[in-house]
Length: 554
Image (cartoon, rainbow, N blue to C red; front, side, top):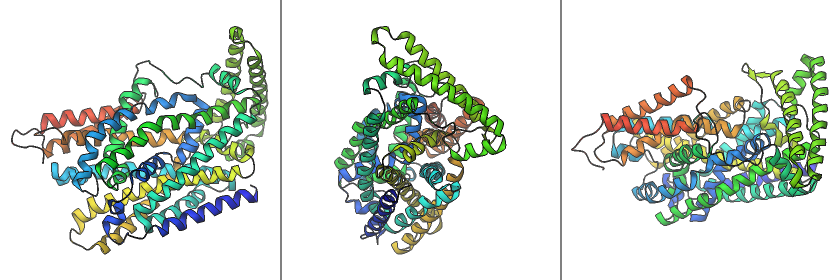
């Protein structure tokens, strides 16, 4: 990589780390460390929430998803505006007004200590796994750049983030997120401009090529629980997922608890409601344009250089045969694309079919190539290496450094927010509740910083294997969907009069069991529906076995 790119990356890392530590002022008390003294303006909170969601997984996994699968993934977010409107009139004002540190404190007030503890434990497990997956995304980039094993690449991004989060708390996280967001948007727009300039056909024809092979299909109205991304899974399953994520996940709740008032907390949520779907569509479009670029510029057989080296050394003859087939398939597809770009729109049916045939031919060779190298006994996937390869080989000098810095920025934003929420839940809901109920803020701050470091280590361990589990954007949401529906169900029960702690506790266990049964017994069910299954099971069991005519909402 050119020295100018290194200057940009190292300079940005240094600046953001120093600034994060500088923001540690005012964190000598627990409320300052965990909630920024509840003094942050709405736009800072809103951009911080957006930065947490726009992680390195988005920059790498979502763009890779767009390159391989097109725009269909945007349906995943269709339930987001619905969820945020509901939360704006229910949980946001309630939790902000309750002056709690975590969302799970409320559950003890409403139900009992065991329901609070079990819910917080499930959150810690799900968020710890997700945090590791987020670290894995930039680790993929560093692995490609340096040729380092994934564990060393994980350490490069994980260690500095853990350090400034341990020192600065949520205030450092939130203000740093604002800068990260600006850099990430700059990088995304710049890459789109470069792609439009480099693709050797008119932008309109580039989109026609993408559309001919299904990359521009957004809506799928088929109602089936086995299809991953449809309009209905997004609206129904996505709404349940977003209700749980934004309403009960401490990584998000902690953000709006830092706002000055309930109205400012609501306003911060509206940023996501209005801008999340267009932003995700733009990120997916980057992937689609990368696909079109590689229609005309021959891509590698393996985007992951480690996979290529393994197959080449293990079976040179097989690698040579695959490469020969791949070159022929790429030439066929490129020729068909050029014909389609020149064909009049009214008579391009045969050209579209020829391009689809060429794309299937390329896909078949790629499938054989992936089958030649396995991960955990399954065909390997290199979707997470598509964008790193493009960035390192095709972007102009300087912009490569900006994009890599943006990936680091996105990772640091998301990871820092996750670590802050993991630390606050560990200390407030477990340590202070069960281990040491009476202590001064100085003691709890020491434990909080230790918890941040411990969770950072756990996340780094998860990241070492998450990079090879397929599309990272799917992996992180699959992890969350195992837990989110059941956690949401407990909070829904809390708003139903005369439900009891026993119903909430056993309902939560039943919800997790139901999701487990579906996951292992019916693996074809799309993971977005896990959120519906978990929430409905918890509410049903809680209503049947936990009602009391004498109890009302506290």
